[in-house]
Picture 1 (cartoon, each protein chain N blue to C red):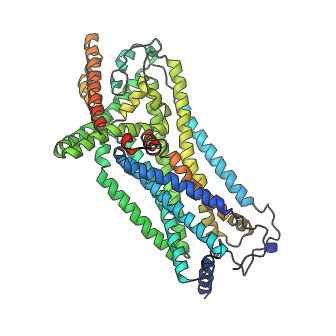
Picture 2: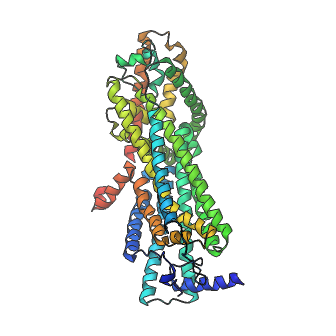
Picture 3: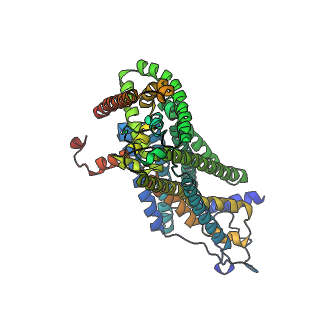
Length: 235
Length: 303
């Protein structure tokens, strides 16, 4: 019965378009006698808690970033180290004095990280090639366009969320490499095909061989990006 | 109309002026409509990521539209132009409430979808095109919109029952937890990437890169804090309001919190205004499309 009473009151109130809801019990007004704390203590407590939470979250995130400063590597592995990373970046090739300090653990880390991408790529490329062949012209063009534009989309939306420098990366190779790293299969697939078979031999290969390896992927990459840009320009 | 006599309540209801409601509604409507139109108009933006952002903007558009409409109807009703009683008016009220509910639930679903999409982009980058095809995106969006419609109708039909409200609040808290964990995980991986790249040898010199890495990290942390903080700051007061209705309707402290209801609704609406700035306007392609749409007086030249 009280439900029915409430409902009729509710419908009456709703048709009145008042910002009042059924819980404002008019028959039994809330008594404000004997309040120990301030009236708005819940409100104040809520907002203070919210502010503390947001600031705490910000500090936790900045602490997460500060605990991971780039550490120094050993000088002898510096040259060999940056090859596995060529999918990650550096077409530059120039070495610094400081870079000799980069350590081996990073080499192992990037190798396992790289294997992760290779495994992904093997599955991905196998599936993608038939797709590319079977789909019609428009869809194929769209897929190309998608591939061409998704990196931009990814770089600008996802990486922008994390790293706003990416768009200004202009001549800054490593961040551009981060861009390219987050692109889909093609470039990484090419690099992997070039690098992985030679990966084991890298430490023993001559400087001439290493330079060749460096040269070819970059040329291929440029060709790739040029063709993709051409596609995107059409659309 | 039964109002609490003022001398019996020390916490009078805080009323927000109607022009503020209307202003927020109109601004939010304009922004989100612009985002939706831009994404539909530019064929380059027909990819899963942009579809989710478009869906979010569409939900925000519906929210601001129904809120503005409701505000206008209240204004007309107060002025006397509109009948206050009658079943058609009540049905209209129901429709607007359900549209609002639909847009709230839809916004939360869209946040979730955007976070999951970004997560797949980063952690399964090479399989992204296979996992997130346009067909699957369409199916997901269809499911989201259908679910929101059904939930909205149910909520307005059965809003008396506590179960519905508990479900709504639980849904919000779970979504928030999922979004938070996804973004923090993505953030940590992005830091690892950036750290590796910052550690790579180039000719630019290690120290300046380290500073740039620090700056980028700070900016990433700030971006994530703004994104998540905006959701929490704008949505939490309303949901705490719902919790308080269920938990302590008679408590005077709770009454004082409930008296701020209109402020909390304004906060909720202001999130629709802030959303495009957080999601859509940060994408260069979208900004470019806006400029083309807004500044081009002659369409022929622009295409």
